[in-house]
Picture 1 (cartoon, one colour):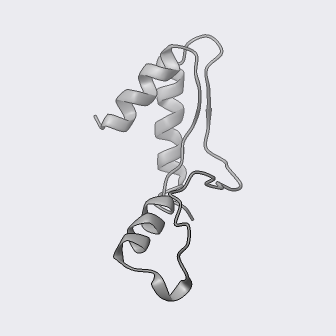
Picture 2 (cartoon, helix red, strand yellow):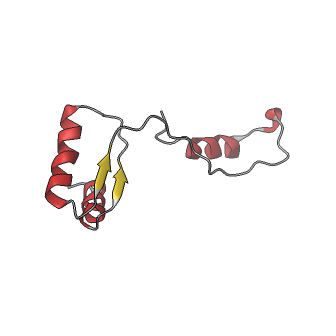
Picture 3 (cartoon, rainbow, N blue to C red):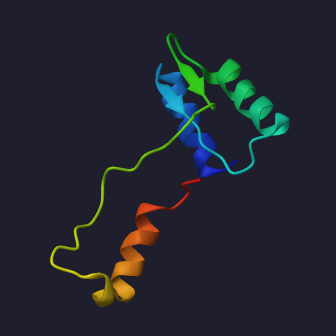
Length: 86
């Protein structure tokens, strides 16, 4: 069992509202998480998989940097902000 599945089961059993994002949104994945909700969902728990958008607001500042001054650090910062964002 994946770490993700164990974390989801734990939170659902406590009645949490969880939003799952995945790069493989298909019937098999939906059924898998529905079965987890049915088996482990506590009172008031909710599992959502149908987001419209994710907008990251957290970021690492790069004050006083011009476009021609971007370097490897800048690339790393932007990669961290956009991990798993479609």
